[in-house]
Image (cartoon, rainbow, N blue to C red):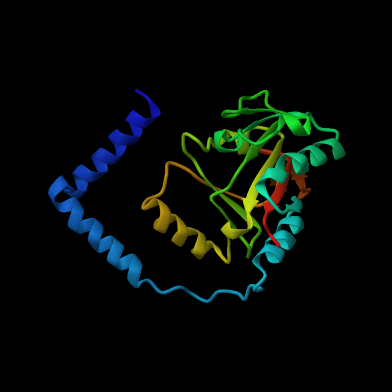
Length: 220
């Protein structure tokens, strides 16, 4: 039995115990949607009106590095500069939607596919980014493989300035608006992987990438 089959089996058992059928599922979902529409948000902290500046400041405070470029076409050169400055490999994997950029022109070899265990650099886009916390929000899917941000030692995220939202509540509102329902996985990334489990000493790269570099596109 595959993971998807197991998931369907578990959810099917839950629906059966709840008495959920195809006939009563529609009004039940309508009730849930109505409840979500009526919800009241709790107090939220003030966030500066310049969301790009706030996102950059919070990201850097979390040990990410950030560069801003004017156009998406400037991304390969920005990535090449970062990799050269840190003496990192010039080969990478990228989300298929980014594979069409002129990586070769920047001296890089980039394959549009999911990452494997031996890939050292992964390049992704994001669904959106959260200015309040400096967090990247990534949704899994056939063209947005989660492994590209989780397996490589270096994760490079390409963030459109227009996709930077104020807070986490706004990120979930955007998911509901554009996706209708959550995909199989939603990953929130706030800087490089870290742990303080060993003698309270902060260690980067404990459970994922050692480095997170963010290229913000169109921030001016």
